[in-house]
Image (cartoon, rainbow, N blue to C red; front, top):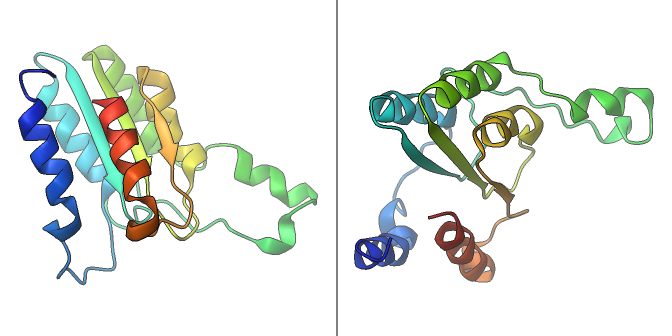
Length: 150
């Protein structure tokens, strides 16, 4: 890290403007994680995925499970267990190839962190969630989380 500190700091400082003119309303975090793991499979390594919205495209797509009426009822238990097999399968691949996956969820809407967290937990990675992310309010926390992970 000390050898690459300057590059990491440039990336962190550049994040605010990196996608400021992007209007894509879909995300493919599962596909991104799978692609990174494939690229690292020969030597192992670490993937740090920063999500701005739940994955709604490609492999690892998660369903919206938020249901305010379920809180305190029997239906609430379905939110507490993984609902997507992709992340369990991806965790097995990453473990076999010695790839660790860290995930920072900076989402303002529901994210199925139970499903996505399987890959971080199984690979020895870290899962961080910045609830109702607002750049001006949470940039310090985001910087801290990424720095801690890297």
